[in-house]
Image (cartoon, rainbow, N blue to C red; front, top):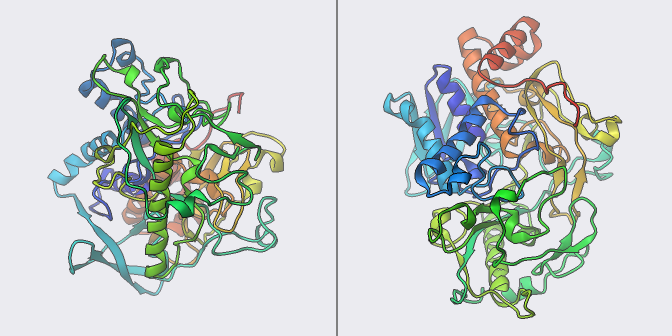
Length: 523
């Protein structure tokens, strides 16, 4: 998400951009990872950038133009194709891909933008405090490509350029002695990170049998029961993220709701009480009769959180082993749903469930990429800590402000269970501004974070890792690179020179980046 918005901003700032991508789809967590937008309650009114709103409305218009929506659905300004309860805009990843591609089309035609896919960063050259080049390795052959550029923006899911460039960075948990955060452990642990999840899309055809072959590691996962979980992982029972109470969800693919009555509101709860509706990305009831056999549902549920290891800074063999194990967990949970999940009629298993790899763009039925919640994080000029955001720590819920704001965000501090054995950490957070200081590495001058790799902690990453915040970070990074080139200055000079900071913030404002939360009640 941050890479897309960073590229768009730099392009709109008149710069030439080379955008590289590991997978076939641009868009990260929204597309190759297949996760619908996690957003705050006020997203339809304020609290996101104009370009993010352009993306959202583009997705809605794509459905209006290309799908047989019921007229009452088509006419809704707040059209939610999936009517899921995780977001006010739940949609298929392919539609987001089409909209993103359309945003870039004009720049490809003019050759202002070059996109290179199926590549990963292999190495980098650094001269003093400046990155001079990045070499990419092809995933489809033995070729390597070296790119030189004035600015390098790292929008990888794990902050892959940080070790390659020698940038100072942090992984895992910080200790309370370092950050003073109430939710941090006493001692930090670089290996303790939030679970990743390999998501998938499913639907259900009643009366048919689409049961997959029993996964090789099914028995392992069938007996897997984290100490704090309160049940086997392969079940409908799991801790409630906010209360940690052990709760059993419902799951009924035969649910026959009216999608137009569903309203996502994260203030009211997480929305996962009924899993079928929770992350539904296309609701059959929004379309004319006969168009869709059943709802399309994205599975990004607690039961596929992979807790057995950390892939950040792991050697190649360990990384591959953990990623394959996470895939096996997802297949195992799907198989459990098909064969053992309790039914409302007293039976077990839903053999009519189908993996929809056609929706995720894969032959294996899973998403192209794992859903990554936590990245390497730069050592930054300013690090956002729990005390900046937590309502309990601050004593009020008014927005958190910074003099060097470059955008806004809002989400609860929401951490999934971790590889170190931690349960959910959920802390009520105030709306916040994004400080430029969190985007300035302590030493390097032309490397900028453009995603989750900004100066947050393990704790505050839980509020910064969501779609609109990552988009805003990337957009600010793209505009910052363009601004620095135009003014022949480095990013830290912009932050620390009042005149330049004011000019840069003015540029962001004119480009539709909201720098402050409005003065309203209800936060």
